[in-house]
Amino acid sequence: MSRVELRNVDKFFDDTQVLFDVSFSAEAGEFVVLLGPSGCGKSTSLRLLAGLEAAGSGQILVGDTVVNQMPAAARGVAMVFQNYALFPHLSVQENIIFGLKVRRVDREERARRLKETTELLGLTPYLDRKPGQLSGGQRQRVALGRALVSGSRVILMDEPLSNLDAKLRQQMRLELRSLQRELGLTVVYVTHDQVEAMTMADRVVVMREGRVDQIAPPRTLYQRPERSQVASFIGAPPMNLLPGRPVAGGVQLDDTDVTVPVDDPEALTEAVLVGIRPEDVDSDPAGVEVPATVTTNEHLGADQLVRFSIGSEVELTGRIHPSVPAEPGTTRSIVLPAASLHFFDARSGDRLQVHGARAVTPTAPSEHQ
Image (cartoon, rainbow, N blue to C red; front, side, top):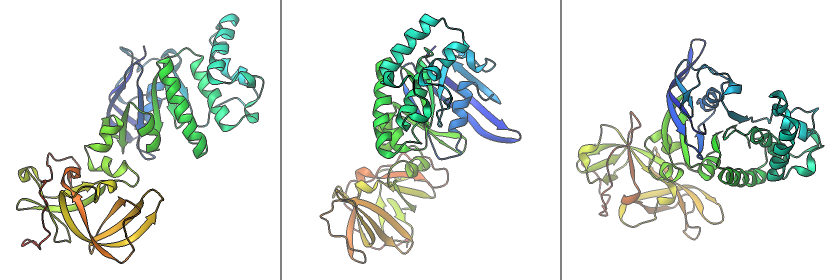
């Protein structure tokens, strides 16, 4: 019963549809993150799995059982909420075992589970304290302890670290991931923070406007986004997406004389987005040399984020070595490496099966300009 799945699920609130044919699964022992901006449907999807919302259509499965009509308490999943949902008048001990008391688990079994859980989470010294006497990280552990003590192998987490400061968030990410692996838990985790998604997940489900854009391991998601919307969401700063149109042998970038050569131009569509990650700009001489003007420069210590203008309305960001001169207002050439280019249909956002040509191409004015 440690596998969960949404299968072709639609969800409506009154007459407004908020989920559209959403499908994803979390296999036994897998850490799956639902990632997307506010309002994309990720928390609604989690609440459907938990039984706190009802699906308009489609199937919700826990293990091999369809649980659409099954109450939340009978599904065998536990949930950790963003605001911890602790009872302020109860002690840590009472908060953790509250669900066991409701289910009338006998006293000895409650004591055994409480001991195991609190020792695992380092909460034993705090059993008699109230939530108001705990730090944010300690309250988060209590909320997790209440989920773990239930004995469920499936844990649903809704933005559980968003109320913590940056340093504690980093620490808790490591602790949660280590605990999940140690116990073999199946976790479905909701966040809008791509750092959490990329560092914790086995697979990431990227959602946008109630739909699933892509499901992939973090490395694949970053290196090969299947939609331009994913490419522009993942990364800090995100991928540069440069609009262009097909010309003989390649793509001419809008508002420039730059033509990006491709190996398979027949796969291009009428309107194209050429993508390149900021860290790939100038990383390899085998590519397209582009005349550029530096507009802004942010020094970050180990590197610098430089904004380049390559046309009156076309700009891109490069993450380059701090020793490279890049003063605002200066001109220089930058290289878009052929092996690092991505191509998308500008209208649908779908990835195109096109590859940049590896030969260095001069930037002579195009006859199509």
